[in-house]
Every structure is written in structure tokens, then in C-alpha cells.
Image (cartoon, rainbow, N blue to C red):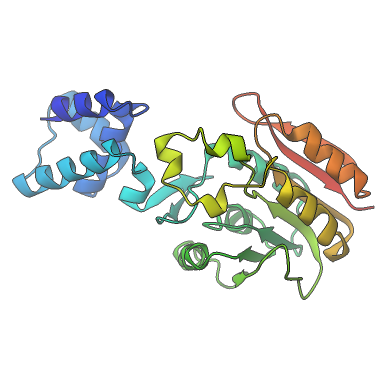
Length: 275
């Protein structure tokens, strides 16, 4: 049966079909992913008829283009398990580089504002490691519901809050030591070429304007007054956007502008300081 399901995933062009099947098997059985690999290798993986039926339905959903994370409702990010929901952007491993960069400068007692927060993965991951106060901000009610679940799930409600916030019209009520954002940055042309998987994610969290830079321009300018002197601003950026975003930051008077590469050697994070 599993071989047939694996073949079906492969026929539908699912990336790393074997890993996907293992993840779905683990979810159906309610066990750790690592245990599935051992059970499959030793021939000790058994499913009831009901579990087989459920697994087949999940595979069909994945073959139709629905992301695995929406099926299982979770995604691991920075070593923590985050709740994922349809209509909310799925955390990516590359975004962990942004968290790395923030942790290099964040100090206990700092205040952090995470704009376009989605699941809240950036701010919550930092709060799990540093003793800082975090405000998660998003315009999407779906994202706010998800981020609030993750605040509860990961036990940080004493230092993390989530608020509804439109970066183009709303203003913060206080200033922050650190501002972070993984904003929508897909261009109009790129939106037409998205893979079936990504098309299942909300356009609201993807489309960054004609050239993909609308949010970088707005945040860099509008939020500078709310960044404390000596504070840092961090952006995740899309492919080949790092130079443009660095230029936007420079034009807005930020200094010490730096670029950090992701695991694939792509320039993924641009950050700067207000001095």
C-alpha cells in the first residue's frame, strides 16, 4: 500500500515524496516522524483499515496541491512546533536565518515588533530564547488567530501579544528596540508563475506590489520614528531583492546595513541600524 501511495505522490510531482509520506504516516499514527522511518525499514509499520483510509485521503489532498502543513496543521520552525492553518503563510526554514540575525543583537529586556507576523514564528522563536517583550502584528484575522494559538501553544503569553495592524495606515503606540518583518514580496510577474503548492497559500501574504518592494518602502519610512535610537530593523527578502532593500534602507537614513545568506547561499536577510 505505501509503495502505491509513494508512486502516486511522485506521479503528481510532489517534492521529496518519501518524506511527505513519512510525515503523513506519523500524523495518522500519532507518533514521532523518526519512528516512522524505523518502522518502515524494519517492516513493523501497521495501520488499521480506518488509518489506511485516512492516510489515502491525506495523500489525495497532497496530490491536489494542498501543502502538507495545512493537512497536519503544524510546522517545525527553529526547533519549535508551530500551529499552521489554511489562509496563513507557512513558515520556511530560510526564515530561521532572520531569527539567527536577531538573536545576535537582541538583549534581555528589549521590545520587538514583528510586522506581517503570520503564524508568529519569528517573534515567538526569539521570545522563547531571549527575555524580551514581543508584539506580533498582522492585518489578517486568520493570521492573528493562528499566532495567538501559537502564543498559548509555546507558553509565551506572559511576554508576547498579537494585535491587528495595517502597516500602511496604522501606527504603533510605542517604540521598539527591534523591528522585524517577513513581508509579502512576490512581484506581479512572479505571482503568475507560482507553484501549485504556493498558490494554496494566501495571496495577501505573498503579493508585495508590482516590483515586490511596496512593504519594504513603507515599513522603512513609516516605522523609523518607532524604532529606538540604536535599534535594529530586520527584513527577509526575496530572490535578488537584497540590493534594492539595502538601497531603500540607506535612502531612509539607516546605517550599518548588512546582508545575510540563507542555507542555499541566497541573500535572504537585510538588516540595518538607526543611529
